[in-house]
Every structure is written in C-alpha cells, then in structure tokens.
Amino acid sequence: MGVIGLGLGFGLALSGCAGFGNLGTQPGVTTVTLASVNNPQMQDMAQLLPEFNKLHPEIKINMIFMEENDLRNAATKDVATQGGQYDIMTVGAYEVPIWGQNRWLVDLTDLAAKDPSYDVADFFKPVRDGVSYDGRLYAVPFYGESSFLMYRKDLFQQAGITMPERPTWDQVAEYAAKLKDPSKDRAGICLRAKPGWGEMFAPLTTVVNTFGGQWYNMDWQAQVNSPGFTDAVKFYIKTLDQSGEGDPVSFGFTECLNLFSQDRAAMWYDATSAAGSVEDPKNSRVAGKVGYVRAPVKLTQNSGWLWSWNLGINAKSKHKEAAWEFVKWATSKDYAKLVGSTLGWSRTPPGTRKSTYEIPEYVQAGGDFAPLTAKIMNEVDPTKPGVDPQPWVGIQYVTIPEFQDVGNQTSQLLADVIAGRRTLTAALDEGQKIAQRAGNNQKKG
Image (cartoon, rainbow, N blue to C red):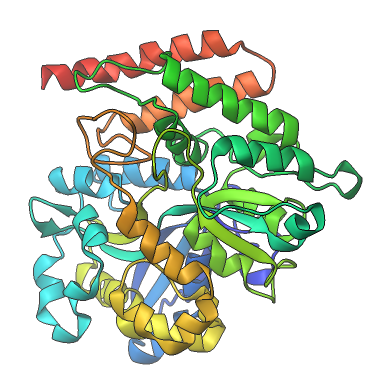
C-alpha cells in the first residue's frame, strides 16, 4: 500500500523497491536496514528519520520501500532462509504469530518491559494479542486498522442520497451506479482488484464473510466454489464492472487512495487508516468532504476487518540492539505526538495506542473517523466474522502458513475473470482445488 501523485513524500518506490534513509559509513556508526511496506505512515516515518538521529547519531537507518506483495515475498524469503538481509521488517498481523512460532523474529517481550515509559499495556489488547505467540511479543504495533466505507458527502447531497450509518452492500451498489460520472472520469466506487491476498482479498474476504461464505468450514473443507463465496465474488465483480474504476486489476490500496483523493471516485471501501491521508489538505482534493460509515453488510451485523502493520526484528539480524532502539522510538507514545505536531495530526499512526486517543489535537483532527475507528475495532469479531463458525482466528485472512499462496493464486484467477480471460466458474473451481490442498494439510495436523 502507499500513495502515488500525492506529493513528493508519497511518490517513492511504487514499483520494485527503493531506498530512503540516512546511510552512514563513518566509523562507529551502525547501519540498520528496514524493509518497509510503501504506505503513507511509513513514508512519514522516513521524513522523520532526522529526529531519530538527533537522539541516536550512532545509528543510521536504511529504509527500503516495496509494494505490499513484493515486501511479503522478499521478507518471507529472507527470514525463511535465515538470510539476515533485513534487520527490521514491517510485518502484518497475519505473519507475526507464524513467524514467532518459527522463531524467525526476535522475542521483544523483555526488551519492551525494560523501559516503563514504553508502556506495553497502552497498546490496544486485540492488536497486542495479534502480534504475540504463546503469550510472548514478537513484534510491536506501528498502526492498526479496521475497514469502513468512505463517501463524498457533497456528491451524495447533490444526488439527493442519504447514506445510512450501517449501509448494506446492495445499497452501496445502487449508490455507486447513480454516482458514476464518466464525463468527469469519476467512478461510483473504488474497490481493490489487484492480485494478492493482502490486496484484492483484504476487502473481498470481508464481503465473502457477510454474504455467508468462508474460505473453510470447521472441518477444513474449502468453500471457494460454494454459494456464499460465489455470490460474494459475483457481486464484487458486477459492482466493479458497472460502477467501479477503469482497469480494476491494477488497483490496490495505493491506487484507490490516489483515485479517491483526487476526486475521481464517489466512494471507497478500504482501511480506516486511509482517512488520515484522505483528510490531509496538502495532498487530498477531497479533504473535509468525506463521510465515514461502517463496512457494508448483507447477512451479518458487522463486516470490518482487523489488521495491524508492525515492526519486527529479524532473528538473524547482526544489529539487534540498534534495531530495537529504532523500533522502540517509532512505536512510542512520543512518536505519535511527533508525527502530529510535525506533519499534521490527521497523519498520526492510528489504532494501536490508547493514549493516542487522549491527545486533544488528534481527537479534534480526527473528526468523524477517529472515534468511529475505535468503535469498529471493538465491534468486529475475529473468531467468527461471518455467518458460520470457523476453525481459525482472523477476519480477512486464514491464519495458516499456506494462505499467502492460496490467496495469491486465487486472486490471480479472479483477476483473469475481471479481465475476461477466464470464466468465474472455472476460476472458483480451480481456487477450490488450491484451497483444499492447504485444508488437507490442516486435517493432517
């Protein structure tokens, strides 16, 4: 995820990867390499590196930015092969428990407890639990998020449409069709369709959940070509075709953020963390014009996801102490205040620390989206996000090592459907086979 075309700070490394930092080769200086997802919050971190160096001139940070899919591939390969190429990695809530179990990440529990001012208990418990394995902390949260629907209040008013506080997906599809405006190159809604389990399937899996589908049932039987899953995918693709952005398979978080912020989409369903960028008047044409409501539903009461991007230290890093000094700084209470006072309060990393929501300036800047984010993150249920029970904990992902590959392959099949290269039935039948192979591994224990 990340931003393109929204200012110099957000324009880095949207394909492949690129470095940004304060590399030093002078004697006595330790260079720490950080592999980072290319999101706005991480780009803000890069801008604030000089502040870290005022405190730690003996440590230089080399940030390497990558798109989400590229980062996952590179970081997973590095830790699995014990390469030690990266000292610190931005790692998602899906990976942390798996990598912690494999001892690919440094156990940060004791390090975090040494400094009382760091205050581990200040992290929201669901987010803290998500980066733990067997009661031990294997990464620390940088920002957390759920998902909600963002919509243009001015366009809705002009069209005479009132957005309900808890919209249904059928209502959203109806609104999107009405608000699509080809004459202004404006989509009715932007929805991710870029291949990747963390791209397309982040929002799509929540749609599947609320339509009564799921990846697996309690017996680890894949459900990819079953009615609930099929109905959700049909709806998603139909909505994209009728009211979505052009060339949707090239749109992930970054591209939808750019489209929506540049007044080219009437609605956008995505991460709550996007609101900070959407409301930044320096980079967004729609700041102050956006309303926020809970994720659309069909058969469930809620359908938002639960996610965090976290900082973890590679178990094979040769610079663990220096790496921890940076990780501690970037996830501290003071860092939240630094971002707000320096770059703007709407850009403060959200969804991790309780104390952030006690900062008056942040509460004021957060307007509608900050309190709604906190409410949503407390409402969602990662143990049963859909209609039927599931044998794992997670909303927009399945917490098994194989899911990364299952989601990636299935999303590519659906991208082929959207592009007209494959029928939906054929794609879901093939996805069923891919998912079942992983399910069989779970049955074996």
